[in-house]
Structures are given as C-alpha cells and as structure tokens.
Image 1 (cartoon, rainbow, N blue to C red):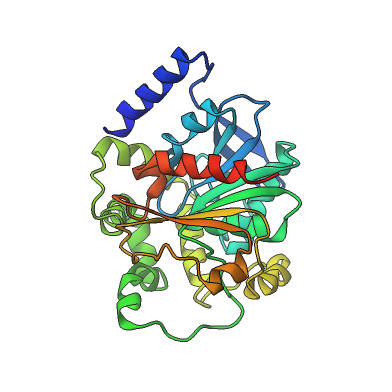
Image 2: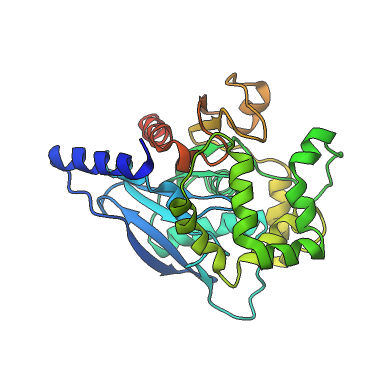
Amino acid sequence: MDRREFLKGTLGAAALAGFNIQPAALRTVRTPILEIGYHETGDPAGFPVVLLHGFPDDAHAYDGVSPILAKAGYRALAVYLRGYAPTRFLDRSQPRTAEQAAIGQDVIDFADALKLPRFAVAGYDWGGRAAAIAAALHPDRVRAAVLIGGYSIQNTITPARPSGPEAARRLWYQWYFNTEAGRAGLEQNRRALCELLWREWSPTWKFTPEMYAQTAVSFESPDFVDCVIHSYRHRNFNAPGEPRFLEIEKRLAARPPITAPVITLHGGDDAFGRASAEISAADRTVMPQLIEKRIVEGAGHFVPHEKPEPVAQAIIDVLARSK
C-alpha cells in the first residue's frame, strides 16, 4: 500500500467512525526570526504534537502520520524547518544559520507563537535534534518525545575524535558541503543531489517521482543552501555560530538529559547503521524515562515518510505514558 492509498483508507475509516478530520491546511505563523510554514491536522482543541522533519525533507514527511494522530484526538503540527520553503526569514540581514541551538529555539518560538504551553515533539535527523533540544532545555514545555534515530544532541564546543573509515565514508556529503565545490554543487544540483541521498539513506524505499517532487519544492527556498551549508560546517568547526547561542551550545555540549518520557525509533534499513533495540546505560543517562527502543523494519532513514503507522503509534503510546 503506498502513501496515497493509506491516507485514503485512514481518512475513510475515520469518517465512518464519526471523526471529523479535515485535510492538512498550510498555515504560517511569525516568530521573532521566522515566518514558519506548517500543516495542521485534527481538532484545534486537541493536545498539540509538533512534527519535525530532517534533511533533505520537509513537512510532507508526516502526511501519513498526521491523520492517525488526528483520529486519536491530537492536534498534529507538521513544521517546515528554517531553510525550507515556505518558511522564511523576516529580516534580509539576519544570518542564514542552522546550528542545532537555532533549530531547537525555533521549536520553542513556534510553540510560543501558537500559544502552546505544553506539547509533544517528534522528529528525525535535523528535526530529531531540534526535538531533543527542546525537550532537554524546556522540560516544563515538552510533555513527551519520539526521537527517530535516538538522542542526537551534538558537542559543537570540543572536537570529537576522528570517526572510523566506514563512518567517515557514510558522511561524504558533510565533507562535500564543507568545500566551496560542495556549496556550488548543492546550489546547482540540489534536486538531483538530495534525491541521491534519499536513495542512499533509505535503500529499500520505493518512493515515487511525484512524492519526491512534492517535497523537493521546499529545497527551492533562497535560504536552503545557506542553511544547509552552515549546519554542516558549524558542526564540523568550519563556521561560527551566532553569538546569542554560544551559552546554549555550551549547555548542549554537556549532553543534557531529557526528563520527559521518550520512545526512540530506528529504521531497520537505515544506511547509517542498524541500531540495537536494547536500552543501554548510555541511553539511560541522557533519557532516564526512555520507555522503549523500537526498530522499524522495512524503513531506512526517512521513517515517517516510509512507515507512518509505527511513528504515529509511538507518539500515541508515549503520550499515554506521560502526564
């Protein structure tokens, strides 16, 4: 069953059950820095779940997740991160940065703009890191989290030891983006390059050209290249961060724990490696209320796009275990 068939079935079943699920509307809201685009699905009075995509993807990653959450009574808010159209910077002079502290703050700014005192988060890749940062630094705001790929907060203060050869090979795109040839390549070939990453990172995913084209529109943002390049250069100590985030980056370098209940998901076919389902002592250190590590078989790196049902179920389950 492809995503369109699944959505039709889910929406049809919901209608038969008496649920009033509206199609996801594209909306925008202004924060101090951004005008953020997002899709909203479900009852506006339902408990809000902020859904955060990764690189290179967009809010359509959650097209199959949001209707399930809406059917369960939640308010699903699938956000376009900074650098991805239609989200845009309000000030032309604002630096087009995308360090982890910035995207984490964007989550809180988004929630403030919508007047959400408490909410849940779910995300992967960039979005998983933003979700983890929001949960770690704002435990009063984040009720629960689903982290696809696990705890991924980085130390951008002290360089790590060099990774092994296999890990370095998998990160070729990061080294590419740390060169001017890589910047030019992303600028000129963004659709082809990002499609290559979809195929490499999720080797068993048979996405359609239409599905990719729908998402690739977001990569045409005038801020996309600058944000992507800054993200991968900053984390590799080749670009400065914003001074206003320096103290936050220092806090993040200490790997602050997430005290809210967490479920982690991991694609069984993720090209970055298959995770263990066993909860380790290291997991408990940074996620003391980690409920479960689930392996999503048949999914690669883009789990919400590939297998929306397990993602939605994990969100429903972790909220059932939280207050």
